[in-house]
Image (tube, helix red, strand yellow):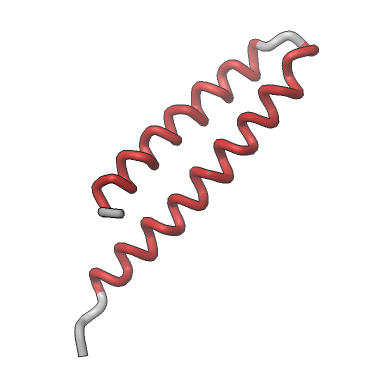
Length: 65
């Protein structure tokens, strides 16, 4: 996957996490558990993508022997 596509996905996930955080603050108590689970999953996916993207960028910046 290209770096550009990874970056776009990371940005999309960043916006989704922000949206879920706002929804969680305003949610009724009976809906908080479901929103917390969605937020946990979105954060995990975002962090995984961040690590992948960081790894891709590290490989590009290393000098070739």
